[in-house]
Image (cartoon, rainbow, N blue to C red; front, side):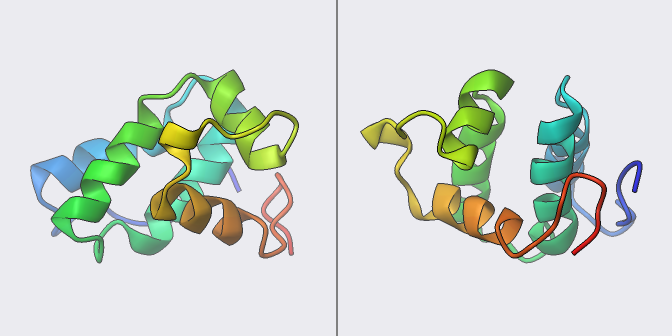
Length: 100
């Protein structure tokens, strides 16, 4: 898998921007982690969930990857339901090539 499988058609500007940002992180690993999550859920997130997802997309890739992979402890300010939702979705068995 090389990029988004979801069309941005029908999404409001904020969701389009977040979908794009999730797939254009700067590191391939984070593109795949956040991008796949966005593909699956961006259309259904509430405004509060969009706020929380936006906060995650603002974090530096190395930090976010280390928190998701468990290589570094998650700071308490990022220990949110949205972080756990992203991490748990990634942990469902997708490898970084898009295979279960």
